[in-house]
Structure formats: C-alpha cells, structure tokens
Image (cartoon, rainbow, N blue to C red; front, side):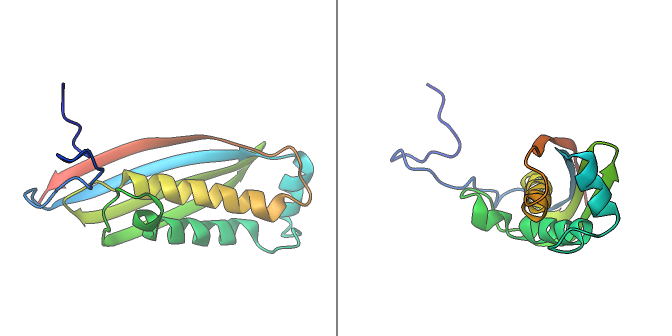
Length: 150
C-alpha cells in the first residue's frame, strides 16, 4: 500500500516536509465567477450597492485571503508572498475575479490564488445578497502554476 505523503507513521496528518527543496520563483493564477442579475450588475457599475464599492472591497478581501491561506487550510505552509493581485471585473452576466500570487520559496502558491478568488467572490455575494437572491458562484479554477529555478 502506498504511503500518503501527508500521513505520518502513526497515521496522523502532517504538513509535507519541504525543507530539502531549493527555493524557486513561483506563480499561480486562479479565476472564478459569480453570476448576477442585470439589476445587480447595474447597481455595481453605478456604485449603488448599500455596503459600498463591491469591486474594490472584494479585491481587498481576496488579497487578505491569499495572505491568510495557511490559517484557513490546515496543511498549507505559511508563505512569504511577494505579490498578490486580485482583479474583479464586471461582465455582462456577473463579475469575474482573477488572482495572481507570486512567491520565492519551496512550495507552490496555487492554494493562495484559489483562496483569493474564493473569498473575493464570497465578498461580492455578501455585499449583493440584499438585492440579488439568485447569485451563483462557480468556475473557480487554477489557470496557471509555474516555478522557475533561481
């Protein structure tokens, strides 16, 4: 039977040991979407949602989430992030969010990018829930993951 890397000899979960890996430049890009009604899209464009500027607040929330990923997902490593950029863009049928995360280290940053997208979308949901009861979050995915030797 193959031993799972996150389970130790006593059968307990543990973080993967990356201590022997060399540092690399790492980047991940994730995206997702929330479908909204036409009225909600209009209110966002006109900055008329009562809770405030939906796009800006969701972008800041996504940055915060990327930075706190290790505190949300138990087996993730705490990483020093060099860059987190979240873009929330109004489209014809909703808001699309992308998140770019860069780091120099021993492990990838895809979970940080996915966390940034997820929380940005949840923030849009929270800010718009009073005016749109049919919102749908989906299409959350990793678009790209790269690592480059130093």
